[in-house]
Structures are given as structure tokens and as C-alpha cells.
Image (cartoon, rainbow, N blue to C red; front, side):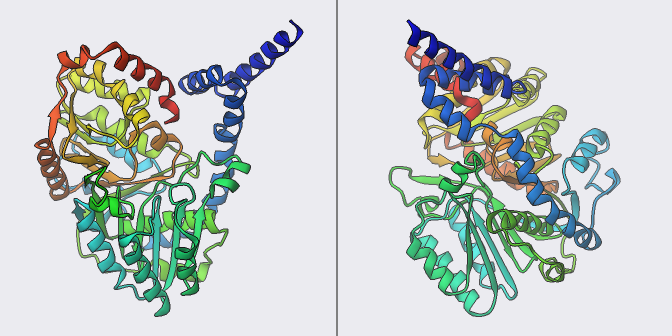
Length: 479
């Protein structure tokens, strides 16, 4: 009896600790209490090392913000910053002052007006473009990926980085410590022996000891000489070329950018470089890292970053703001659909009010648990009028949102809570009609490879399926 009382008191202490520390996030608290109930002691140990984020966010932010302050003056002198709504393209923003104000104040990355972009719709097209521009590097080459594999396409990237380093180009390379944990040391040593500076971002062991394992760098960035940049959903691996039979065709979206917006891809990389390497970029280097360029295009583009190094959950807030003002359409493609309560209600409200809301998700996912959690959000949204489509040609990994003809987004962030609140993410917000129409064309073409989820049939799925979705839903704030 005595031991039962001790065990009960320990369990109560663990549960109370979670409730106190997570009082700001009830959904997250419920998820951790569910884990604690299933595996009492183990669940609390995992919570200790993985879940506590508020104090760590301050620690990470302190390390990253100093670099940005040093770079800010250089960037603002050279970039064409959009400061007034009258500078936005066409007359689409005439009645969108609130949205414009939101976008202008979300982060330290404003809307820029002197850009040119190119949408890249699959791995083959994106890799060819990245390798082509990397070959042109004269001064520096910055490469950052969540997943980088030492397979055929990874070796091609390795060869270009080695060749450029041997030519005297400064090559800096970051991989996420967990996402790229399979990258072999022999592969890395070849890069380092050639002069490439390589660092893992928060390696799992160090991150666990430091209680930062929950922070994953999900960004995909390439910057060439500070003038050309790439961002989107594509990591480096043969699976992104459809070379994995178990996955099949891989549908993804990336974007190539030239112009002022590249300055903010660059500043994001340098901030991550400081966190990963501990090396500070010095003042004399800023002129070379942020070179002046001739304005060759008039596209408005904004680069939004979010993560533990930011004061705002900028990508989530941009999505919420844009969805809230939609009048005609909201098109979303995402491999993982686990919206936070605010976005969930915004999508439901938009559909009920007559907005054409369409969401493409995979038919087969690379994560059974996440797929079940995603499906748990579908039924009520279906009843509200949201149309869901499951991509059947292969696996859809693109992260795209289109709202009316106001804006479109291409980036690294999934439509899920992990991307919005925990990962280091990056999204390009495109305002030009040509880019929006191209992404809309791609979306409509993808619909041809989808099957629409029928509301009646979905409501009558098996009880076992519903039960699995319900249990997965309880864990969704952590996924």
C-alpha cells in the first residue's frame, strides 16, 4: 500500500508539472498527459528532454538576433523595401490595408520590390537549376538542407561544392543533425578536406543533453554569391527524383529567386550558420555577402522565417491573416495537415462563408501516425464545405498556399503545428500575378492526379479507423 501511494504521488507530481509548464498551450498539455498516462516514467523523461521550449526559445533567440541587427543596416540601404500599399502590384490590395499592415510588421523581413522568381515544380527541374547556379559561384556558396543524402544526387552536389572550394570560393554547408543523421562521415570528410566548411545543426546527442532536440532546422536554402537563391520543399536525395520504388513519383515545389529577397535568404542562412557553427560573420564581410545588384525584375516578394530564433510565429500568422481575408479561393497543398485551432477555425469559417477552399494531401503518407492525425481534422471541415483531395500519382510533398490573387506561398513549412511553432522554417510569399497563376496552374494539374474525399463515404469509415484517428489526434500538437 505504501508503494502504491508513492507511485500515485510521483504520477501526480509529473502531471502537475506538465500542467503548470504548459498552461499556455492546453492542447499540448493534453498530448503530454496522454503520453504520461501510457508510459508514466518514460513519458516524463521524454517530456523533460524534448518538450520544454519557452526558456530555450529565449536562449536561441539571443544567439541569433545579434547577427541580424548587424546585417540589417546593410540590407536596408540596398534593398527596395515596399513601405506603402500603393506600391503593391495592380489594384488587388486596394481594400487589404489590414493584410498589408500585418505582412509589413510580422518580422524583420519586409516585402521587397525588385525581384524575379521562377517556380520549379519537381526535383529534376529544381536540382538542375540549383546545380547550374552553384557552378557559377565566384565568391561564396551557402547550402542548407534538412535532409541531405550521400546518394547519386547528393554526390553531384558534393562534387560541385568540392570543385568550387578548390577554386577559392567560400563554401559553407549546414545539415540538420537529425534529418541528415545518416550522412556518412566519409562523405563529410571529402568535403572538409577540399575546404568546405560543414556543420550539423543541433546534432541529436548534443541537442538532447542541452534539451534542444525538439528544434529541427527544416529549412532548404541555397544562396550563390548573395545574388541568386533557392527555397522550397525539396531536400537533396534520390527519393526527390522518384528513385525510391516504395514511394514512387515525388511531387514537390521549389522557387528560384533573384533580387532583393535574396538578401533575406542570406541573412537567414547566416543566422543559422552562427547557431550551428558558433562562428560570427564579421562586419567587413557584409559588403561581399550582400552585394549591390541591378534590379532586373519588379516582382514583390517577402521571405518569412519562423522558429525558436524569432519573436513571432510569422508563417502561421501570415497564413491566418491571408485565409481570414479570402473572398474567392484558398488552395493548399501540404503533405501533413495538422492545423492549429486558429487556422482550423479560419478555414472552416472561410468555407462556410462561400470561399472555395481546396486542400490536397497525400493518399499514402511517409508517416502513418501523422497521416491518421491529418485525417482526424477532415470530417468537420468537409461538413463546412472544405474540399479535400488525395494525391494518388505518388507522394505529394509540396508546401503551397494560394489565396485569391492576393498572394501565393512556397516554402519549407507544412500546414502543421510542428512547422508553425517548433521547427526553423522559411517561406517565400509571392505577390506577382504571373507567379500566382503558375502555382494555380500546377495546383489544378495536380487535382487531375487526385481523388476527392467523399463526405458521405468518409463519415462511414470503420470504427477502428476513427479510433486510430482519435488517438493520433491527441498527439497532433507534438507531430
